[in-house]
Figure 1 (cartoon, rainbow, N blue to C red):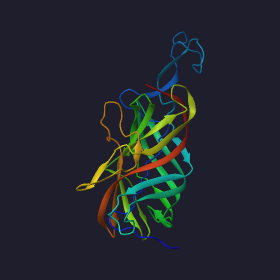
Figure 2: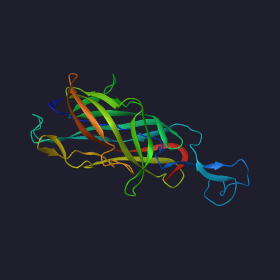
Figure 3: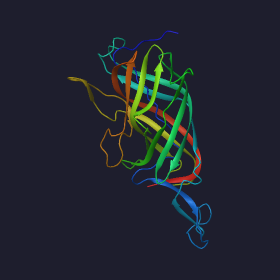
Figure 4: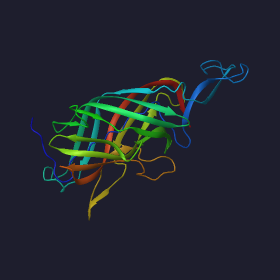
Length: 275
């Protein structure tokens, strides 16, 4: 199979990863239908769907079991600026695609995600296999952690994820193309358990021109694609996004903002996310 080599800036791949039901920041958090010690206390019946006594909506992670996630195609994207690569003199948008993924993570009060690890399968770029270890076309992220955030602009609740220790969220090699170390953080948008109890939820990552124009060389600008939203309430634009450090034969040749498009389905405790 013919493989194209990317010189100069090369490609980017970003692997962010799954959270369980979510984790929270300053205002958002996990809530459950919690049984009260005294049967006459509480405003709800069991399940908290109807008025009654014995139960109350309160901060909770249920039994604390790990959440399990599954996703189909994940599309990792980097925009190569014009004039920086011999292979792409006019610039290019490079995609790393993985056919499927699965992961685990654990929620912690009041709003945290811990021990989030995802395994991506059948990963390729430009026809070349990408892998983090010995198993071909398989990328396993480092352990990630994060929290729930109130997404700016009234868009709901998101989960911000970053490396649990150090700065690297994932590191992998795409054969005859490049070595990539992904650093930084990103935000996914939570759904299906926001404002209502559910044992299942979704976490969606989308890309767009969130950083606007970026100067990659004196007098030369381009617009990279990064994950949206790029910030949380009270933060500055561009506070949360990923960078990919691109190397050839262990020598760093460039660092580019990068983004991931993906939706994962999560099964976990019967919880709801509230602001």
